[in-house]
Structure formats: C-alpha cells, structure tokens
Image (cartoon, rainbow, N blue to C red; front, side, top):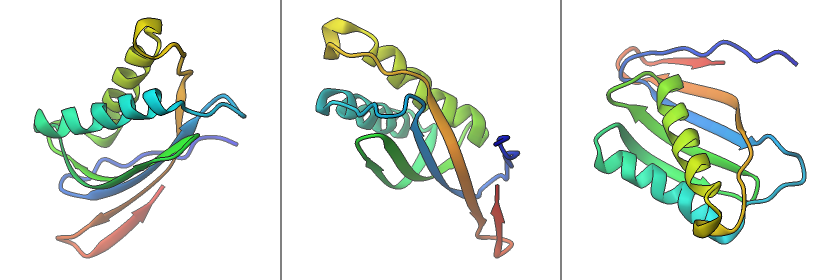
Length: 117
C-alpha cells in the first residue's frame, strides 16, 4: 500500500500513529523510555506542543502541534533521535529498527476543518 500524502498546516493539531517497521518486534521498557524522553525533550526545546501521547509495545500515538518545523520534520526528529539512542547498546542493549508513520489526522482549530491523510 502506498503511503498517503502528508499535509503541513500551520497551527493544526496532529494525531499521529507510528509503528515499528519490523513486524513482531516490541520495544523493551528502556527503549520505550527513550522514545518518551525524546518526545519530552522536544517539548522542552519548544519544537512541539504536546497534548497527549502513549508509547505502546510496537507503536506510538501522539497528539501535537509542530512549533518550528512541519509535521514531517517533527516526526523525523522524534523517530531519528529515538532510533539513534536506542541503537546504542550501552544505553538499552537493543536496536530500534526504522519506525514507520502509518497515519496522520489533523484538525485546524481556527478554520474548524478536519484533514485526514
């Protein structure tokens, strides 16, 4: 199945679901903590406004507004930083394979319009 296009809408709240690319792979507790810390660090750096998130064994749900970059770049930051840290065996003893974003739903609160990709 081809990946649907992503929309960058300034000020929109995005609901992101992303999963591990490797089927059957689950995050260890230390790896899940790395993903969580990565998200919270980006909030501290004012790169995103976070409304909610949950790190599941093989996927992540996050509700956010990108503040400095579009949604694609913001997700690259989350996935890239977490993946690089998890691949460090001294940190977790595991390796996080590529994480694939599988759906995006966003809501433009100013226009009261919903977009789905």
